[in-house]
Length: 354
Image (cartoon, rainbow, N blue to C red; front, side, top):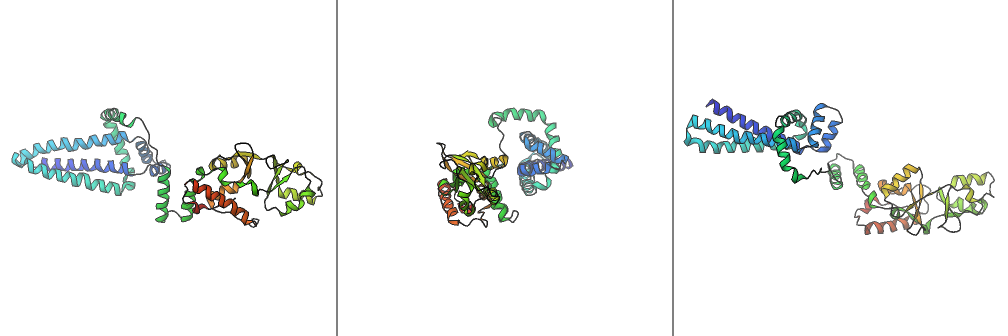
């Protein structure tokens, strides 16, 4: 009878351990494990190795679980027959099955799912040791399942999952509302192009390069822009950009006869189709705040600024120099129509203008 009791305890404990370990490994998130691994803690590093290749530990756990359930049941059946007689074998098998389902499956899996983050690190080394001991059988299982997986590595997460987690975190108070809003806005960068963000050519302020400072003085003073486009004969023939403060400084110094073209700086051109995320990278690398947007025929379509791109992330940016709000409103309405046509429904959450 003692042998029967001990064998039942071993089978239940072994089955519970396997069920608990399997559930914990599948429940703990890859992101959480990578975060733990940054501490360089040995158990966290081992757990990260396990998560990178889950097929081996899971196969080892499944093999061990079946050993406990199948081989253990055979041994328990033998002890039952010796202790109670063959007539009790069916009854005891039913009781054992019930105990395995409750204490070997349901309870440990429930606890594993609920407390995965708390016990995952404790199970790292035992799982690695188990995979090492059962390595030959695990290797065989890998070869059997390899055609099903075809060597594909699933991504840790995706855009939709990050958005969902952001919304959940905001609702639960883990992430501030403004932080969640900005995270969601980041994903709109690759949905927008320079054409969507630019200020159209019809409302661009520009100066002709062959004019003198004196001839353009009133236009320069009235301009609300810190950077003004300089052109040759038409807006499609751009020479560069001039900084308003430099132009005014030249006027104060009595250089009224200086040609505007002589004070122009080089300007970069970008196509209408360039994505906003790449546009932001260009602004960072070139250390410029304004670029000229050209259409497919090489004509000027508009201008786009670093502020236009940042407004996708932060919302509308209006300072004390933005007096002509109606001009910005025209650009905003134009962009809104474009965004709606692209199927971006939450436009209102990052409403902005050039």
